[in-house]
Amino acid sequence: MPEFSSGGVSIAYEVQGEGRPILLVHGFSATAHDNWERTGWVQALTRARFKVITFDLRGHGKSGKLHDPADYGTGKHAGDALALMDHLDIAEADLMGFSMGAGIAMRLAAHHGERFGLVVLAGVGGKALEPSSFGTKTADALEAADPETIEDRTARAFRLYAENLGQDLKSIAACARAPREGSAADLLPLIRNRTLVIAGARDDLAGDPNALAALMANAKAEIIPGTDHMFALPNPMFKGAVMDFLTGWS
Image (cartoon, rainbow, N blue to C red; front, side):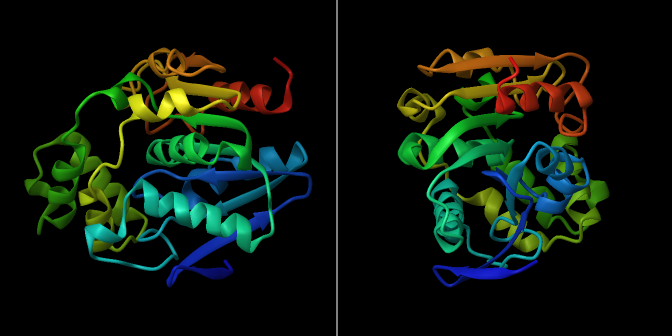
């Protein structure tokens, strides 16, 4: 993957295909390859004549590793995304984020909506409106000497997932400890882009996407039956609903 510097942090990225640009933002502890390549999204989007831009978030994958929580947060990640668009001389693109990536996409659309066309917030729902202890529990799990000692099932799953991807666990833990910057309830009413909020019916981490769509002026929600958080992206129905939205078939 080529790299560029965003405020002194090396960000690894990839551009594939020709056509309308779309920026994809992966989830917490994932990589661009695992969320978007392995699950077939890049292939589907390039086949539909999109120019697909993917990147590893700071601290993840092949991007720069930072161990201070102050170096993370949605503002830092959103800044890297905009810097990448500027680096590639892309004035406007469609936008899709998954899970934590959806939170980053939410911030981008709320504060820089003119840079984006269609917006997809995937793997998120009403749980984004609630207080959460996810960051602390997950960071503790990532820093645990032995994953067998982790009692919280979700935190343990993220630890094992990050390990399987060969992530720098200290960097991922620092990302998890970054303070939340602004609430979804404050950001969503600022979004004017046509937006799809989509999650699986069994996604207990996301909750009901209708709760988020209701706070936006130009949004709709989709609930995909039978899928949970971890298996949403490879789900054919999930992918089909997003592709229909992006290509204007529905």
